[in-house]
Image (cartoon, rainbow, N blue to C red; front, side, top):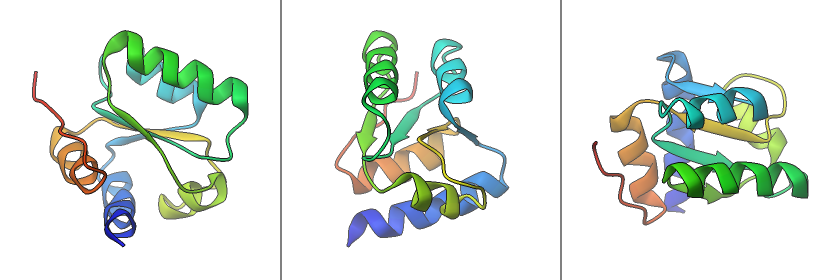
Length: 106
């Protein structure tokens, strides 16, 4: 499955320091226009999903719903995370491409 390969890159991106995780840091990255791609856990609370999706739409940040909170956290070496923001354009392009999302450089 292509998305599993992409999600495997999350660990590498986290070690490179280009992942903001959790609702607060993800929102902050979106608002500061630092985020290039956002991943939201499918089992995140409805309020969290709506809040992050609305921010992404308002700030024109591509996002995808996938995986579980536990799995997202595990992939970056942390506890469960409801959402992640990628701040590096190259990681964003690679991961977004596997979900069929084209990430544009600004």
